Length: 155
Length: 349
Ligand SMILES: Cc1cc2nc3c(=O)[nH]c(=O)nc-3n(C[C@H](O)[C@H](O)[C@H](O)COP(=O)(O)OP(=O)(O)OC[C@H]3O[C@@H](n4cnc5c(N)ncnc54)[C@H](O)[C@@H]3O)c2cc1C
Ligand code: SF4
Ligand code: FES
Ligand code: FES
Image (cartoon, rainbow over all chains, first blue to last red; front, side, top):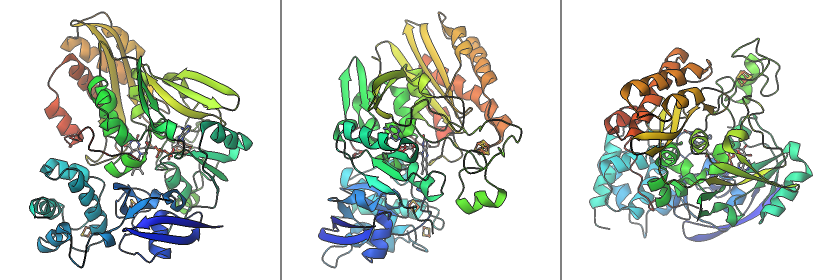
């Protein structure tokens, strides 16, 4: 069965007709063509699918799309504003924090929520906040350094 | 790609409405809280309810109330729980258990009720449909025998919830509601030592709240063994709660996690310490006694003989911690995380 879903995605009101068994990840990628959010393990183990729902990082592969009714969703596509990269995006690019890039959207969105709540997190806090985001390429050091640099950048 | 199987979705607004939906067809209906256990299981076809009753719309379930202790709604997220200053100050063991569940994202979604009712786990069961089919299904789902112990008449899947052993050690109770009424049972009685029927909860019952008694005079600690420091299910755990009169233990409970199909109470080990001062020697004998009852099976990560040995260490660490020893270095060595999550910074939905 199809259900009509109304929510806000990256500050724009969205109305979509989607299969009722779909996850938020599937609706974002398949029905809204927002393919920035990545499809990894589908079981909650990797963090590639992380998005913000009402400002909180969650795993979109384990959220029923129907449960997103009326909610405010932020995906990696919503990070840049007025054609300008978010400081996190700029620092990730400048400091080599992305290699294959598959984990990057989930990490950017999770780090954004961290910096919104705690503008000056310690290194240990950054590691903790990102502990649910797997990266197979970088070894994490550049990622943590990029988040530290973004925290210091003027916003 | 693993899609969810089809299901009817119900989103009640009140507990009464939820109980009524559940009562229509309890055998084929499952409750959905945070979904971090149920949805992966549905994708892997381990659980395939025809109806899913979602609890998220029932706002009264996501509140924490003061009283004689704390009344924690079953829908309170783990992030909400560890962000609560009362939990952090008065029930450090519960805080430590909840803070080590899964990942920050999953704690933003997963609830206390869902954590208590978490499905038992096993290497032969937590696999996708094709994997399980290829070796032939086991009795927990679709098959007849147990691959861990082929002569076992029952499933030996492992209780893997982090908060249940701690809540049991703290003497918590749960409230269960159905259209037939309400009953309150000790957490210890919510569980059965059977990997398939691991809950005594009736199929039409909803866990609505968890009541933790007043913490006055009590200290608590939770120690967990897992493969990765970042996150992992427990493969052995020790929850300890004790009430002191000066240095003397007046009351003490030790509950082991992840070494049985239910949280396992180590009463004989606890009795060794009751009425005593916690000396190094007594702590060691209690740790040995506790490890003696642990029955880890070869169905989780790590070698089982080592897991059993580690139970002794975990119980010992927990007892040293409640005695007041500085265990920070040892905890960091085991958890490989600082557990810095600040109270209040973690938002909850
Ligand atoms: C990668 C990963 C790692 C994890 N690591 C851990 C870990 O380290 N430790 C740990 O303990 N857990 C872990 N989990 C499991 C899970 O995230 C948590 O246990 C979580 O608290 C489950 O809560 P939930 O609300 O998401 O449960 P749900 O998935 O919504 O429900 C779980 C079960 O409980 C039932 N249920 C839910 N609410 C109620 C209720 N009110 N009354 C009766 N029944 C109910 C459901 O029907 C279902 O059977 C992990 C999960 C993943 C995917
Ligand atoms: S313990 Fe045995 S029956 Fe239970 S899930 Fe594992 S293999 Fe299956
Ligand atoms: S795709 Fe959601 S956590 Fe891996
Ligand atoms: S950059 Fe490749 S997984 Fe992180």
